[in-house]
Length: 228
Image 1 (spheres, rainbow, N blue to C red):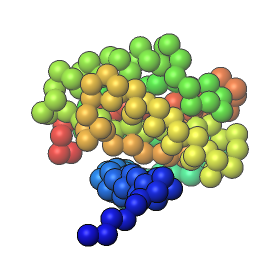
Image 2: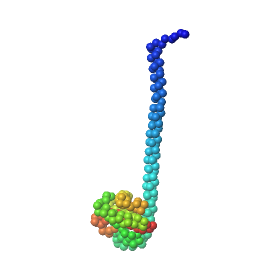
Image 3: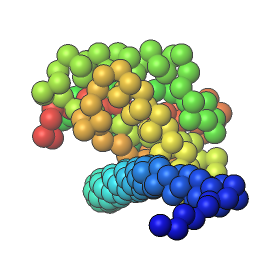
Image 4: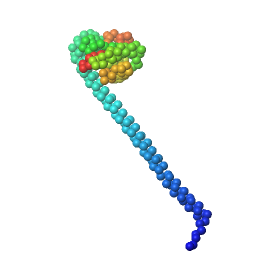
């Protein structure tokens, strides 16, 4: 038999080849684990984006429902105002004084038909709640919490007539939102709160002075039986 002599360089080459094969073998599970981790990370990211899209869609739906409900309420209130105005004699009063008289009559009728009314004051061009405003809302919240099955609240926002009506309505809406949010923070369910932004259309004073206009800047909380 003929013996083949294996030299040093050949042995070295064989050893290196064997080590390379083992390294290749060992790296395969590691790559698989890394790929699995990357896929898991991508799946988690996609799930988070899907949840974010779902939350955004829910919020947009709630906003649209609220806007529609507010528009329907305002349309109904406007129709009532128009009918009331038709029944009022023009007399010699200014338009603002006439509106104030109409509003006072409506408020008296509303108090009899709907329940107690709380007036929350605001500073000019502001929707911030003062300490006095919060104290008044606290009393309304107390009544609503004591009657969770039988009472709801209508939150009506107003402004003075110092600016354009579009800006006045926007300001009155921010005021109603502040009051509604504060009521909710005091344990009153938002489902029991209806908001109306009415701008400067319903002054409560015939006094055409700074003091009289200050009374326009308000939010009215009307507590009424559920179902009215």
